[in-house]
Image (cartoon, rainbow, N blue to C red; front, side, top):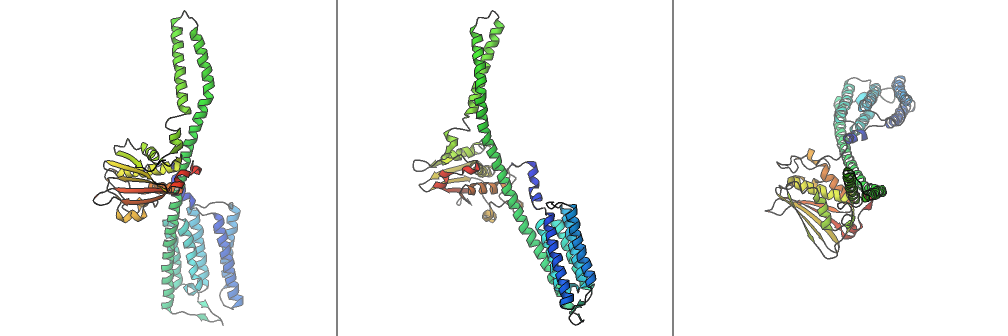
Length: 441
């Protein structure tokens, strides 16, 4: 499908996932409070003999960074990926310093290495997330060998068996890698869906803008009609007078013809045959299918529209979302059809159904259950043909979203054997079709 988005929309996903400074500052204050409480309880509550002054110095460094960020940047500031990476790297190193002073990987709080990695996976690029993951695991590996003993009650040091310490390190490594990959994948799919929905909203906004232009054209034609009528009247009165100058008479005749031509153009603007009237205000299923297919009839593929049902046929209000969704489905069929696309619009007393089928290669069985997901063509060998080098992706997702918003249900499949070709079925409850969704206009 040809892109309908403005160039700046390509960065929608990147901008949407940027971290707010306020989020990281609040999380760090929470970490500072937790670390302070842990040190106080350990030293004064349990009597553990670890270097409290050095621990408080590291905690104070984290608090000082928070104060500096608050002073330097506004609360609503959004961080670039580079800045967010540096701040999360500081958190990892600060935590590594605290763990170095309190037993290394033997300290149960070593699990907190997962926190910055998870934040990075949900908001940063894969490369920066991988970098922070390596930093976390590198710090844990260093702590496995270099750290002060884990202090214990009574002034003794708790010495864990080396095999147990290695097991903790392995579990931390596996856990960090799994959490990072899982969080990154879930966040990436959420961003893809959000970007595709934004694209659908932009398409609807464009359709709404075009619909508003219809009214503006009619208003302009009405406003221009009065001065043009005055000009026409003056021209006719001048032409009625005898003039000895033949050239002057010819000019008046030419001016009168031009005025009539302008009036004809304004009449078309005020009531264009293809954008107004009963056919566009309300449409039967066959008329709706014809309107959606109209822009694709010059593609070289034969498009046939048929339909039947009990009279009277259901009528739906004009709906750019429904029209664009059907047009997208037809465009997809035209792209992969060999020679013909057939559109069947039928209705009963309870349902309205439009079936779009083509004689192309059909949908691969491996993707039938995932059709309509955004960016499917990037992840699998979706339906392709030699004359249409693209695949399934954002276009079908937008079509599905728009039609489901209009209370339609969609089914994707292939023609019964031995026939080939894709079959897309769009079905509404008749009441929903007749009600329409004027909110999309």
